[in-house]
Image (cartoon, rainbow, N blue to C red; front, side, top):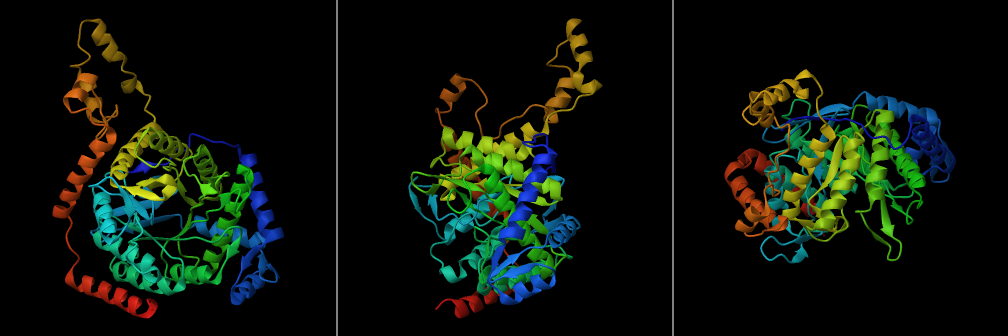
Length: 481
């Protein structure tokens, strides 16, 4: 896959406004503080100059600055898959990853929405192997047939087993986190200091770091696994309804996470991954397809650039529950806003219904949407050759533009986008092909790609398979009661 460079051509705010949001976040951390349940961690923060008021820690701005400065030193790293595929991550690149742990899926055979299972984790991972625009898959769906005590661990195991690409995992409690560290270690020991993937951890909003979260953070970060803060307040529910207030809060929570990451292991790469969503205030349900998702992601991309952080943002989100026009325009608008603002990682592949329903067909469609976004964000070259005055001169003198070597050259190098999934001819041709809508075409492509991956992906070596199985068996025996 061709590396895509971050190209921040869109700025919602000037530097003064971005600095104003930063200052508001510092006030939140210094005046209101963050609830930290772990008494030992509170004392350590106190030793670093923070004020402690009961179970709340009021962060010293100088410590926040140290954490920001430190994170900038580690804003470039490499992920390596079990098959040797490498993905470079930095503030200069743009990467993509899927949604994660979605509880329902539209069945590929019946078209009906149902609960997800282990087979869906495996199948969607195999499908993602074949999507040329998707860099780092997560376990797209939540395997409902796995006990909750080991569910995140099982998700990580399955995606590591079946992905030919680097992966993203999640941790939410220390019991699973310690086994997740072991699982990563099985692969990372042979990767020359690189990692097979990242781990996302979510604090609670507003401004809460329960002990189970900080203990999980300590285990993952101490092990040197790149960590992604996934702060996700819901505007009007667990954060202010105003966009400025929500961004200031999610930024404050992310900066607090950066400080803790700095204390646990200053060498571990920190990824800035705010997820600010808004609700339908009539029902209280999160609706991820609103334009505010893209707008706040774009502003957070600016904040990440301001700090020198690698950003991981939701863009390709939708509220629509099926592969229709609504899902298309919601994903495209929100994804493009993040892309044009210089996001380094863009999430959302495969998700529908505000990330509550997954779809095999949508994975394939999102691959095409992302290709369009990448093309739109790239722009075009302006030089003597691309201005093509000599081509125009040749045509005026009787030559054929179609047969001109210049036309052939730029056709082959991708000057004009050629869809791999979408229809690109006329009505009569569409009629001859059966008048299939995009979902029908995507379904056929998904089935085709799944068969292809079954033929291509090599199984794990026997010794690696045995080691992984032992980890999962020990975790099951200890945690599933």
